[in-house]
Length: 418
Ligand code: NAD
Image (cartoon, rainbow, N blue to C red; front, side, top):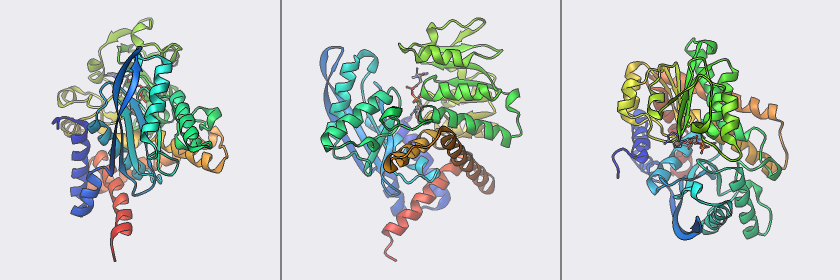
């Protein structure tokens, strides 16, 4: 196993918290390994040429409810990464007390090289090969990196054809007219921003005197940028895979988000912003800002980068952006790191709302959804903050302690003979 893999990192955070709570060795093993690992070889056309693409669905834990987790399409997808992301989903759902376990799926492919028709065929075949291991009470996927509402709609259709009846609740993050929920599209980014604002308040900082840099300008980063700018923060830097933009006076984030959302999808590199300079993704992480939001991919804040991070607050929009060695360096510097399993949980919280609405065939208003989301996340932050103070540990350790304890309680009820 690669010494710096995301799986190593997630397992080291788990071990650390399991030590802190003195987790029973048997239950520790149960929660260390995924319950099920599905690997499929999918024949699919990429740019007109037939290839075999590796696909996965890793189901980490069903102790607290059906498996839940996104599907990503990315060339770097491999089984250890998906296993790590599945475990993160278990801890995230437990921390926020959602009645789900954790799972994750992915296909190693580059969607930029594929036509829409090829993507659709790939998605349908992936679903067929995973059945009957997906289902509204079994395992409920959602969008992640490079997957979106349209792909979720194909999954609903394929699963409905196979079932012989309509099963919209088999995925979340669907288009509104197919049973999607108001507020789902922006939930993860808005949630991350709400938590950043609530943490600034706890730290006694005024959002209007705060500068922010955001790495990743997709579904998470772009909505977080908009919400933070609306709250008065100065978003001075954003980036995507093509590089970043910096402007000391603040960037026009709504305009940039419209540009990148397309259609067709475009990258920041091609956008002209008067007075803005180009900067690299690495430089963005090391900028002299108050708040840093990594919202792109894992393993971005390495130990080397952490030495140069100047932000007082790091808000992990992405899954696994900080490696453990960097986490220690940041903690020693007094930098507060709000962990991924709390920060980006807004997506799965509104996914849960979507699933509940589907199962009851009702729909909630946007105001109701946003209010419920805000309550769940801010309560989660306060619980983590309290445990951080009480136990003298970092917010990440506190989040894992709370999450593992809750799963452990259910495990004991389900497995202990007395
Ligand atoms: P996305 O595909 O919509 O956006 C990803 C962004 O990151 C894009 O701007 C892309 O250009 C950029 N990017 C990709 N590789 C990069 C690199 N090497 N350096 C810099 N930028 C890079 O994906 P997303 O849904 O916004 O997901 C981002 C992160 O948030 C992932 O870690 C994902 O697992 C996590 N997450 C997403 C959701 C959700 O609801 N979408 C929920 C929880 C967690």
